[in-house]
Image (tube, rainbow, N blue to C red; front, side):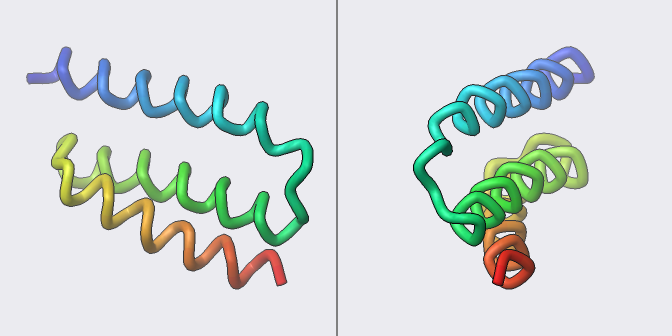
Length: 71
């Protein structure tokens, strides 16, 4: 189980880094939203042991927080 959790975290981090490379044309607020969603997804995955619901929930909460911080 720990190997699967480590793989999920590493995969999420790699996807986040690759996704951020496409953010050159985004506004500051949009970048904050994307970064917040990525960090929230990783945090949700860690806190729930890789649960898909926790990952999606973390992404949603992180995206909202990133959106508000980017204002």
